[in-house]
Length: 115
Image (tube, rainbow, N blue to C red):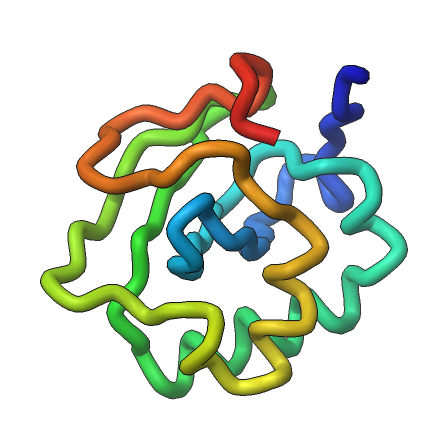
């Protein structure tokens, strides 16, 4: 089944979260997200606010367009695991489970079997 991808606020910056196949948190910025997250925008925004304030070590990716292709922006030595994340972040990250581990991947194309 194909995951529908949409941006909740086209033209505006939006950060959203996922957990990879190894249990690490992954932060995505800008571009489209799985449509099921759109019902949780306030919770996703709260997670982004927490990250802005606390600056955790994360796998982070950013999109510069409407295509679901994200490029790595952060390579942490010791990334935050879902099990160590505060509930504000963990509760929204589990809404999107990636089928793969991000590891040292530089590009994530959500249309190519990641979600």
